[in-house]
Picture: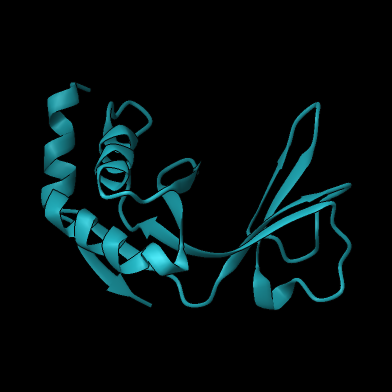
Length: 131
């Protein structure tokens, strides 16, 4: 797929903001009820809704993240989608934590930057709604 094809994904694309806030947690093992778990040779990282964290133990914690899911099928051959998203958000001063699934991408932005992130994504042509 050519890089220029990414424009049509923005033109017809949708993004959904999940309710609530998430934490990005460093832990010894996967936490129960995690949205995602990333395990490599150095650490285990869990992304979890803060409301589901409870009294679970962790080694590192950064909270107050909001989840934005791109509510569309993004083929693995698509070039430049996340680069365009992260570039637009970086230009607006929004830092992200990104995560890709088989058919879609997700970005987490700090809650205080959510409105700025939404406006930036809308400028790309995405329809953004809150769940």
